[in-house]
Amino acid sequence: MLLYAAAGVLAMWLLAPRVPYADGWRHLARFLGESFPRDVLVSDNGHHEVLPNIVRVLDLRLFDAGQGLQVLAGIVLALATLLVYWHLIRGFASAQARLAGLLAVVLGLFWLGNVRALGHGNESVHAYFVTLFLAIGLHALVRGRGLAGGAGAAALCGLAATFSFGSGIACYAGFAAVLWLRRGGWRQWAVLSAGLLVSLLLLQLGGGSGDGARLAPLQQLPMLLAWLAGPLLYAAWPLLDPDVAAQLPAAAARVPAQALAEGYRSAFGPALAAPWPQALAGLLGLAWFGLLAGRAWRTRSLAMYAGIGTACFAIAVGAMIVLVRLDYFQAHPGQLLAPRYVVWSSLFWAGLLLATAAGARHGRRALAGTVLVALLLLPSQAWMAVLGAKARTVAEQSAMAAAVGVVEPDLALGETVFDELARALPVAREAGVAVFAWPEARWLGRQLPADAPRLPAPGAQEVAVVANRLGADGRRLRLVTDAPCRRLLLVDGDGTVSGLAMRLRPGAQEWTGWMRGAGGVPSPAVACAPRR
Image (tube, rainbow, N blue to C red; front, side):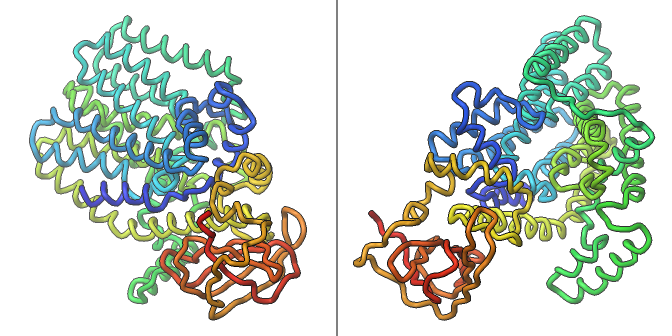
C-alpha cells in the first residue's frame, strides 16, 4: 500500500514537467490574454475549470507558470481524497476489510496507470479536485449525521466538481446511487436534483458543454464497455502490444511477451483499437457491479455504498465521454483507450474492489484478493513510469525548442498541438513567463560578455540544419560535455547566444539543443548562464 502511494506521489513530483505541455499552452495563452476574473471563468474546450484555473492563474502570476504550484496542489488534492476515503473505510467490519478497502482506493488513485494525470500538474489539479469532491459528497451521504444534510452537502460537492472539470458533473450519478441505496425520501432527492439543475443552468449560462453530443446506443455501448476496461489494457500492455513488448529490457521477458502480443494482434487487431476483448472485460465488470449493487440494496450495508457510488461515478464519466465524442472515436478508434482517460476508469475497478471489501464476510479473503490485484499490477508500474518519463522528456525538449524559436517538423510534440503552442509563444515571451522565465532564455539574442567563462569544447558535436515551423531554418545540436548547469547557452562565433541545450536524461553527459539561424560556426561555444 505504501509502495503504491509513495510511487504515485513521487511520480507526481518527479515526472511532471516544469513547462507547459498539451492543454497547458492553450491555457497559458488564454490566461495572458484575459484579466481577472474572466481568466478563470471562461470555459475551455467545453470544460468549466474554475477551481483548477484559480490554481493555474496563481502559478502564472506568482511563479511565472513554473508549474510547481500546480504539481503541489495535485499532490495535496490526491492525498486529501485518500484521507476522506479513509474516513469512509474506518466503519468496515474488520481490520482486514479496512486494509483491503484502503488498498483499493490507493490503487485507484496512485497506480501508475494513471500517469497521464499523476505526471502532469495541469491534469492532476483538475482530476483530483473532482475526486476530492466526489469523496466528500459520498462521505456526507454515507457517514453524515443526517441524510437531508448529506444530500445538501453532496449537491454542493457536485456543483464544485462540475466547475473543476467536465467529468465532475458525473459525481451526481455517484451521489444518486448512494441516495437510492439509502432509500432517500423525496426531500433528499429534491435537494440533490436542485444541485444538478443549478449546475446545468450555470453551465448553460457559461456557454454550454454538450456540443457534439449524439445518441447512438448500439455504437456507444460497446465503446463504454471497452472504455471501462482501459486499466486492464495498460496493466498487461506488453502482452497485448508488440511495439511495447519490444521495449522490454530483458530478453527473457521480451521474447515471450512479443510472441503473445503478436498473437493477440493477429487475432484481434491493435490493442488500442480492438474493442471487443476489452468490451467483454467491461461487460464482466458491469456484471460484478450489478451483483454488488444488488447485495448492497438487500443488506442495506452502509459500508458498501461508497464503493458503489465511486464505480457509478466512473460509469457516468464513460457514458458522457462516448456520448460527446462518438464521431471522434469513430475517426480515431485508438483514442478511446488513451491514457488520459485511465484516471477515471481506474476508479470503476477501485470502487468495485472497495465495495467487495466492505461487503465481504471474511475480511482475510478480501484482503488476500486485493493484495493479489496489487501484485499483478506491480510490473505495470515499470512500463507506465517509462511512459511518464518519456512524456516529460517530450514536453521539456519541445518547450526548449519553442523557447529558442526553432521547432523542426519532425520534433515530437506529444499531446501538444502546434498551433496552440505557436499562439502562446508571443504572449509568453512578452510576459517573460514559462520557458521565457528561465535565466538562460533571457540571454537569447544577446551578446555573452567576453569575460563570461566558457566551458571546455564538447568532446563530440553534431550540428544539422533543420527546417523550422516557426520561421527561418535553424540548427539542431547533439553534444557531449560534463557541465555543472541545468541548461547550456549555445554561443555563435560573434558572441551571440543563439540557442539552448539540455541533457537527454537526468545526469547524462549527452545534450541536445537548438540554435537560431542556419549559418554560424560549425562548433558553437557552450557556457552556463552568468549569474548576473
